[in-house]
Image (tube, rainbow, N blue to C red):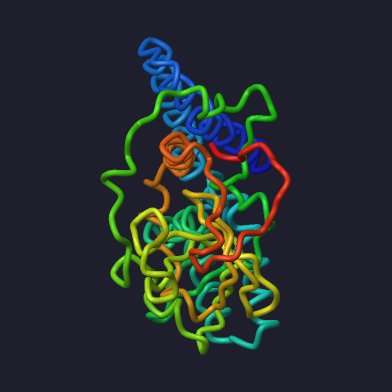
Length: 294
């Protein structure tokens, strides 16, 4: 019965994420309100099914030691994180995360919520310290909430180049220290910058580039060092070092930034102009590849 309930919950979760990452965005791009409403209703149905499986398990399985089925995969991966943290020598954090996993298996609501957020945000707080765990995730598939979905598969959302410009560049803020994860700028923190969106120190840029669209970068990392980075809005590459950044953009801000439409709008307004080599930035020639946004 436990295997059946875990498998059923996993299938519902998979369908919910497909609706959120594929069906609803596609309907929004097509401006098909009927399809969007239908997709949201379907999402609500499967959330209800998932809640029902969880309630049934709690009623009949909890007395026999059954854990919440909607966290079955999270338990597996979080236990792997415990081992990785131990190998890194941080035994206190490994113990704290292990205790949280065990509490969640016993249906502690705070612990269950914390584990779900860990896989949405890529980090958690242990003993008052931010513990970044995405370095243990696969490069292109952070389980289970984040994935590198591309439009090369026809079921994924339409290319943003086919959507109208949303004109968000004019309202883009000048990101700063208040927008980054506290402590992520410190060398002593040993937080990896790989696969994160970073906020640059404006002083690392030529004066003419100290504008909102030049604040967010994705680094190319070797060990603890940043070799160079790509601007996620302008597609510009620059030679940059770790201390050129003030830290990692907070996940709750990143998830609300539509990089694809910003990039497209910037391209239209600048006609995909080549990098100005007199600006102080070193352009890196790169063969054209299809954007990989969702």
